[in-house]
Structures are given as structure tokens and as C-alpha cells.
Image 1 (cartoon, rainbow, N blue to C red):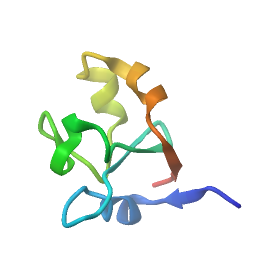
Image 2 (spheres, rainbow, N blue to C red; image 1 turned 90 degrees about the vertical axis):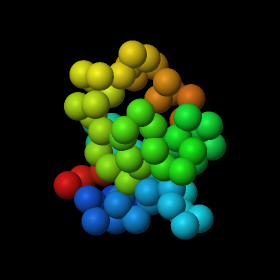
Image 3 (cartoon, one colour; image 1 turned 60 degrees about the vertical axis):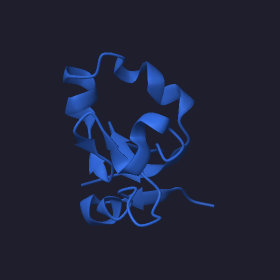
Image 4 (cartoon, rainbow, N blue to C red; image 1 turned 90 degrees about the horizontal axis):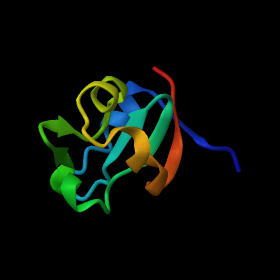
Length: 79
């Protein structure tokens, strides 16, 4: 089975709202943050699920990329 590929429009559907899962993309990888309490409702410290957040995690996140290893990978992101 091939890995799902998301573009900006497809990723935006997974915003954690109205029963949708919450996905974020970092460095071309799409992660499922639905079960992360801090991402409840698809929001985390002013960031919204359904978006590409590489610059946010590299430039603003106190925990950096280390938390990504704990998240399920659901696909690849290509804008």
C-alpha cells in the first residue's frame, strides 16, 4: 500500500474540527496530532492543525522536533 500524499488543500481538511482528525506537516512528513491533548480542537499555542508547520517547529517550538518521533506518520506532504 502506498503512503498518502497531501497537498495544501488536502491537508487543510484535517484541521481537528467537526470530528476531523488533526494533522500537521513538518519537513514533508504528515503527522497525526489528534490524540495529543495539547492539540485539542486542532489548536496548539496559536497554531492550527491542517497546516505545514516546519518553520514554526524549527523557530518557535520549545521542544523542537523531538516530539515528532512519538507521533503517527500518516503520509507525505508536497505543496
